Image (cartoon, rainbow, N blue to C red):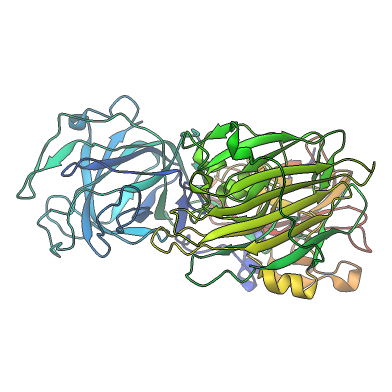
Length: 613
């Protein structure tokens, strides 16, 4: 167990001004409940009702709230179709209550109207900004400061019949928003605030009469499902904070994808034969994407849609899944091996697991969200789009086990129409999974032309289970043409803190994501940061130093053991004395991990720590 000493800190703080630092007023922050925004359904209310978004907000240090961003769904689409209110400005009443919103959801009198704001209605999947925070009495701009503490918060969406400025003229009425069902009960935190106990009321506290006047609402729904929300704020200048600088080595995710917006043009990967060639014998680390040699084979047998599904979010084969078993063999893939079961989804993807889950996240298509693609079990997406086999086509599963060691399973979506069905626009996709790990994909016809409903199609592979996504998408067609090699799953060590660096406390400096099998790591604390310095000359290509080793800047360097969770934690005791206010430290970790470079050493990101309140 090692502790970082502050003995040299006060005398040497001038050094930190020479390079990278986290001094000065904290930068503006944003905390999102989902990133990217997730969606299961859209929610609305009867015309004239307000709609409430509720949550608890824990504030660790004073903050100034500048606004929010939310999801509206008022763009002239949906099932049923909602009025198109794009460009309208709705009023949002912002209420607070001390402690928690729980228990006070239907008691409007218990809440304080703290501010009002303007909601600019923007088409999904873009965010709708909530800005121009004003005093609810005077209507003048308000600097909304929240002291440290816990609050219940309610954002009341007022229908766009209100008589404020600017006047609303396009299809005025009640608003709708997207949400996640069922509510997972997840809290969302950064180092300054936490959002918890979130939910929405489709019929809120008030109604709007024909003249646009708010009146009491006697029909108030309970709080349900989870909300999409971003809160924008700035911490107090005196706040203690930490800032991650740069990135460690190496980030080579196994997941890869392209997200394709709907278009009346035929998708570029239509009429292609592709193979995902594993680079190793099982266990498999990664693929090379190459042009394929397989041709489309007309499926035989009976469509799976003639039988029962195992899960459905629509109570029929539209947005449904069925579990199928491999017979005496297994299919290996990067990060895993399915020994018995696959789950075929009606919308053009295959889960590499036995999944029974009737939520829309599992059974539905993407509609702008990559969160289920990231968070659910591993899956192959040859063309994950919104399809509806209830109006045509079929889904087939075939298997060949005649040659031990060369078994294969073939999954086919044969002429399955896009939803909503339009004559002549359907999808024909075939995926063959081989016991070697080889994946062959033939797309004999693709369509995703429903720009009205705005569904994106996702093509690729996800290791799933919450594993971090790549920093961006690939161009799938170009990747196949150039022999793109996917990542081997390497994840860089991440250095962070388990609490803000507040005077008089002892937070921990925690390094996570350490590669299993690593036994030791160097931990370095200095009084000076630096711009990233390459370490390729030391046998560490694509690794960087984020701390300065100049004489006088070094505080401590330790060789530290790794715990059973493949992380280690260094206590950082901070005196309560006022002289430590604003003092900065810089940290970096270097695990001794063999096999990834010549030096057998990885580096974490840099960490800048400013002590404060």
